[in-house]
Amino acid sequence: MALKPKLKAKVDELFLCWISDPIIQQSLEENLRQIVASEVITQPLQSPRLRPESPPHIPSSHKLASPRNNRQIIVTNSLNGKENKQTVRELPVPRTPSSVNIPRFYFPTGQPAARTETDTILKRVQQEFSKVEGGKAYKHHMAMISKACGLPVYWKMLLFRAAGGEETKFITFQQFSTMWKGVVKENHDTASRFVYLSQCPTGGLKQMTSTRHYLMYDDFKPLIQDIIETHPGLTFLLDAPEFHSRYVTTVISRIFFCANRSWTGKLTVQEIRRSNFLQIVDMLEREEDINEVTDFFSYQHFYVIYCKFWELDRDHDLFIDKRDLFRHNDHALSMRVIDRIFSGAVTRGSTFEQGKMSYTEFVWFLIAEEDKKHPTSIEYWFRCMDLDGDGIISMYEMEFFYEEQVQKMEALGIEKLPFEDCLCQMLDLVSPKVKDTITLQDLKNCKMTDIFFDTFFNLDKFLDHEQRDAFANLRDPEMDGPEPTDWERYAADEYELLVAEEGANDHELEEM
Image (cartoon, rainbow, N blue to C red):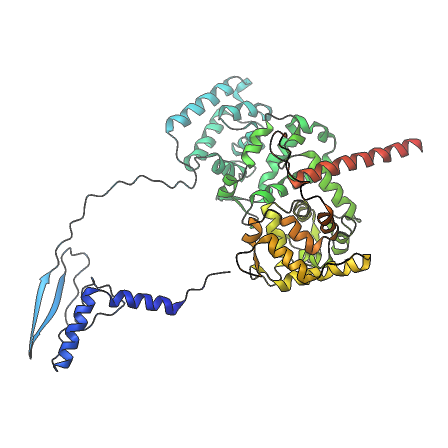
């Protein structure tokens, strides 16, 4: 909620500053003396809008000095009784110190590198071109060229397209050199270069009429498709081209879920810098098991997401409605929160279709549902619960969602917790800065946001939290490496269940 300035307090502050000035006080005392003595006031009070140091207004009968002239005049009135004398004096020319050379400290596209660095890179690239027949580099040569540039291997398709390789099916060193000089001219770090290269049209940089400082969904498709075709951990997917677009969509949706903190659908250079996306792309070169790359690219994670969507999408048109989503996880979610999801509260741009949820939107939903501690998940569910969009979750809004939970508990014969008691528990859990109102920042500061959200719209998980050992989720001190997220744990468990279920179905078919 935007801050509103207190105008009266600001006016009082400015008046106090004005009245406290010694020059103003001296002028007021002199004017007061002249009024008491019935004398003519010789100098009008300065307007409070002017600084005390400002020269007095010049009478309209005199011409203003030209701003091109270094010397200006000041006209003052001197009154002795009825005598009015005007004096003209010149303002002294200000002595300006020699300009201080402040080095540039802000580089939105990265700090420029020395020209020798570009020359060194091009020499290394030229050596790679000299190794290929006829000096023509095809797609399968681009990995070494990408490494010669000091870039991750999986930038190879971006470089190939930017140099015009999609049209000619190969590139020469001259094409690459021209392209590379155009890239590094204005883009000086990996994030800005990635954004610049990724938005190149099929014909390369020569066909680029304008540039953007952000990426859209489709800009990632060539990169992800090349990973499908060349990563050793995805070779099995080459025989199933019908799933390529689904995998690509899943990966891109996860990238935007984690990195697009502005929720605009436009992934900016700054957002890419702040995310770990480029580090994960670099990691793909060293990790042959794609499932070990749990950020964005895991095939197991894709398998879980797609299977969950396929179960709900009964007509398989890649869209689901409210009734379909209500069946998710055995009707675990409340209908009121489902209504909010389909209201457009968590959808941006032209992709929103009334009453429908696309596969891309389902990817966001499932991750938000299973990992409610993720920053984007917190924002996702906060948008759903903030019914009036005022930036806070009020007691009324909490009661609105809790009513359906109570109805479910009564239908199941479960002892219900009165809302007043539930409210006290939630306020103690979150510890908001402002009493009885919960902001987005309050929830981001809370370590148990999953309990908060599940209390209001996921009865199964709410009951699970009530029965679970409070120390069950404590980290094992003997565990090596980072602790898996709630999403990673969910995806691993679900993948095992899905594989076991598929194996059982195959066994039944063999027996038949």
